[in-house]
Image (cartoon, rainbow, N blue to C red; front, side, top):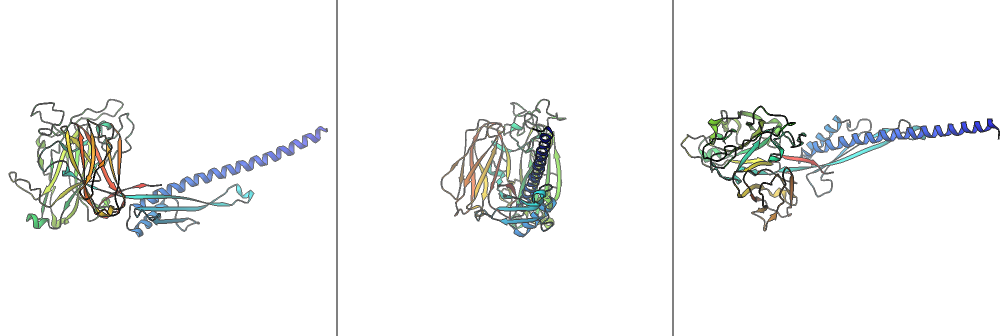
Length: 459
């Protein structure tokens, strides 16, 4: 065969191969770009769905908010072929679900040589609004009376596995705690419309029991541990290096009182009334304290929901405390728990056992608006000598066994509420041991305009 002819065939085949190779490379480049755009679309859909769901049950506000977030993430509705679709209750069974679908025509850069010019890329997301249950603060004790359990928060330098999932900044292995919340915990102080009639005054005084992180040596025993009678704090060292070390093991707790401005679901417009910090302070140990500014006149703000925010900013120890509200009184005048006020933890509550035993935790009232949905109860670190947990509702027959959570772990109990559920108060009978610190969360998959809530992606 003629060598020149063979050489010509090689050139032809090589040219054809190079053309095919370039076409494949071009298509791979285009496909990779489209996958990138698909990821961008999914991000925009996720964020828009979460933002829109936070505005439910106001469908108009939900859609406008979703459109705003879609535009901020590169998908302005009606511009350059962008389409943003929204829908409440997309499956007809979940009025607290909010669907967002975004789409946009994306160009082929090299595919045009094959007649491919663009393709519409879309992504969808569904977010669910879950209403937080107001967990009764005094379902775990009595006004002014010490007992086996009280509220508690750890400093940000504490061990994560000590039982406070939201105040500690690092996990036990030193990694950042993904659940760390610098804003701490919120407690709603509910002042009824007839407060002045009940108490003969417009003045309200908010008191905190043992707001400091100091333990007296009185009463014997280990002064570093709570006993429920002379001490409610637990003094703890920080985890060893490489954990960051605090300047002191004693925790500093910041208490901030807010007026919710008539919008209890929206914390962004709350008005600060007063703020106070307590660290190592013997003068407030085991005493009810009304901080400066924590007494206010209802003529200034009116009845309704006030918010007490509790957060820690220093230390590694556990600060035990309680909260109550009512009319101002002299030092000798007893506190009247029947003054019409009510204090609830908004969605989650941190508690600590001072002694081993069984307590009935009055989790709170779940209204009839939750009917047909699910009740979620999440528990963190229910592990120190814990034996069992059982739930009951005063309007439903029977009981529901719960699951305990291991050391530094979460567990979730899900209770299906019947369609004819009329509302009721839920309690948890919990048996655990001394120094058991845990966090409880409670919410339901329906919308209640009177309470804040949380949002999550369903799919």
